[in-house]
Length: 259
Image (spheres, rainbow, N blue to C red):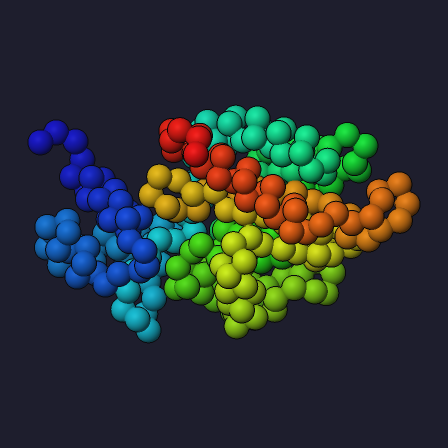
């Protein structure tokens, strides 16, 4: 067979890991790929050095690393996702009259790839190309909540991973896990004042055809009434609209007919 065997084998490891709902033992990779045990460990060692896999030593399991997520984020930026999202966000802004954006996970951060600003609304920090700590943003929380617990632990291994902007937000893995459990229970994520004082956001994850979270749709709105911005909108109504936009974007990127 033509090609580079080592490259095929390394890609095979990543493809197997990508199909798993959580990190797996090396024996699983050896069995599924039909490789010698020593070859599997050599491949894992190289991929770990490059950041594509992470070894959870306490569990003797392997999962995808930050570099794999960065590749996924690059795909999301370059693929039709961003172009398709523009049309979906325009419709969402017309509905809710607040600015909307699309973000992808980039390690412990979210990267904003599309923004649709509502007429008369002020500029936001979540402009295209901006990166923010994922655990502080509604978009990041929506995405982190859909990752395996072991992967979240790998992304946030210690207290140093929990930066803050305004002295609020989860400061430990335990606090983050509680917050993400709430996100899964509600079906959408929230933040208020943790990115920008006086503003709040609601977000919902977008999944690919494998059920993996690839992006998040969010709306940012004033959390305080008065002035030219008016009274704060209904969070429930915004969450319904944002979740609907996320499902519509899923249907379009997966090639499914509208439900």
